[in-house]
Amino acid sequence: MILAIETSCDDTCAAVVEPDGRRALSNVVHTQTEHARYGGVVPEIASRAHLERLDGVVQKSLSDAGVSLDEMSRVAVTMRPGLIGALLVGVAAAKGLAYARRLPLVPVNHLEGHVAAAYLSEPGLEPPFVALIASGGHTALYYVNRDRRMRLLGETLDDAAGEALDKGARMLGLGFPGGPAISRAAHDGDRDRFDFPVGLKSKDNLDFSFSGLKTSLLYKLKAMDEEQLYEALPHLAAGYEAAVVEALSRKLLRAVDLHDAPAVVVAGGVAANTLLRRTLEERCERTGTRLVVPPPELCTDNAAMIGAAAADSPSVPYPEYLSLNARSV
Ligand code: KG4
Ligand code: ZN
Image (cartoon, rainbow, N blue to C red; front, side, top):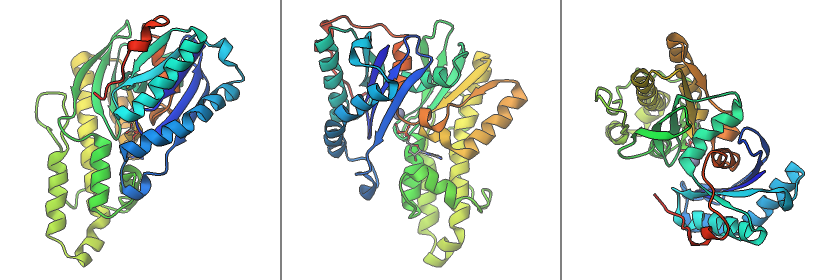
């Protein structure tokens, strides 16, 4: 079995995954609540909180799975990308556990982990497929070939989709995280009341950009007094959310078309968005494309997905991995 650890951002995570990476026996996530009052993740606080929590989280992942460390054949850990201090805590812990048991270590790319969440939610899924990863830190499109090799097709040139939602929510005076807050505010809104730009809409590439959308919201807000804002809030939220969803869906379907992919996978925190799910369900049904969106607990950061990705990744033998280093990018 694989013991997996993930500490790249503000969730302290450990899981036990079966060797083929298709089933998690446990998946423990401790979400740090310390950041809410700052309206965003504070890296130094995240590292310290990981340090305090990780041992307990690893213990719980073993006891939830009903296994002991002796039954592990590999230790997997997120090496990159992420907050460097946060990553270092997980990497040091994984090295220590693996070294003590003379086990190999599997370094995992966090984004490949998000994609691999699809294998846990649909164990029968086989590539090829196109994957969209949209979270607070990343927005990227991948093509996964028959050998499960991942190729980057496009990514955001500025903010991540979740980050754009978080920043928009802050401008609108809504809570954090911004994605769910904007969705709630948008509930009775008319998404066509205001005109928001869809980033790189007509560009013939598979990249994303959300800076124009943010600026557009800023200018609209500048032109309003408080009373106007109160009346416009649901419509602004609805228009802003719809522009993010349109940018994501449009590029994802363009990638499907270009690569003639029979299936798509969507993961990352933004995959929890109802409008995005509904839009993709409709469009994929029209094109006969299989749509795989893992359940929310596998879409947001977790260690089970890291274990799933490790099943297809080369492991580094004992004790060579002691010289490996975490990387922020
Ligand atoms: O994957 P995730 O939990 O953490 C990383 O960033 O790695 O993603 C968090 C992001 C936040 O920006 C949050 O606003 C967004 O996902 N998010 C949502 C929803 N739930 C979380 N965005 C839109 N709709 C949601 N329901
Ligand atoms: Zn993530």
